[in-house]
Length: 314
Image 1 (cartoon, one colour):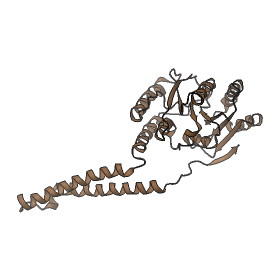
Image 2 (tube, one colour; image 1 turned 45 degrees about the vertical axis):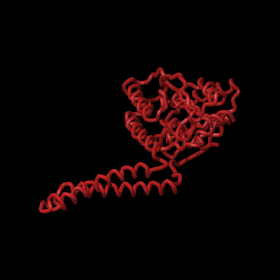
Image 3 (cartoon, one colour; image 1 turned 180 degrees about the vertical axis):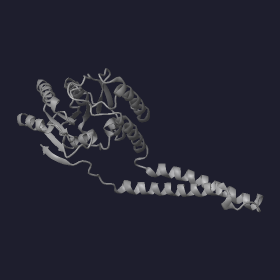
Image 4 (cartoon, one colour; image 1 turned 30 degrees about the vertical axis):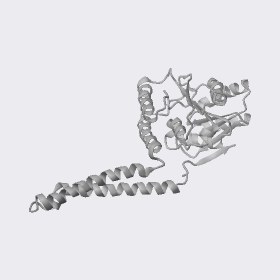
């Protein structure tokens, strides 16, 4: 199979039939062997019924229905697990991503040898205050921390080699940082392609301003994991040594001052420096313990179940 198209969705019943017909037209005109995987992330409208109707007339369609809304990252992760194509293409279900981009995205991965191609919606039709400006700030921070020179990390239209999506684990809200996750796994042939962005035709956006707040927290998580995810003791141990060094420094100062310079002065326990020394030594010890626990967890971790499937069509 050449292409797997993975489409997470939430309450997009109005757009699914038009989107599916558009994709099928592109696939057949280019003679691709393909599958379309819809992941219904807890929709409350008729999205799942539409998917079942589409499946009845298109054997290429597969569907996963979540018990409730678990989020886009979990939906993508579920789709990635069953995708069989040599190239996996993700896109949103709201018709803002154009299926006309699929042939070129496929060629860039399959024939030009890129591991991942990320779409760049250079000209957007979103609200400038609600999405455009926050997106620019968010993308700048992501570029600065990751070293990847992408303009639009959160674009839903992306293409991957099969090996990429089988090597990464997308959880939480990490779908924004799949290029960073791929880079951390050693896939460095990452390119960007300007793609067409269309105004939303049906329904309303499912994202609010909180996604940018969550995005920045996730960015910090990605940065930490990329730097210290495989060696937590390097982070916690360094901080622990620093705190213990400060604590022992104050303790030595108090001892020398009491023995040689001020033997009849205040008791050591009555001085502020004593409590600074005590606190920093305790904190340093705790950080060391946190590092050891992190190393133990790293050695024994197991994959956690992050979503629950209600129905599946394969």
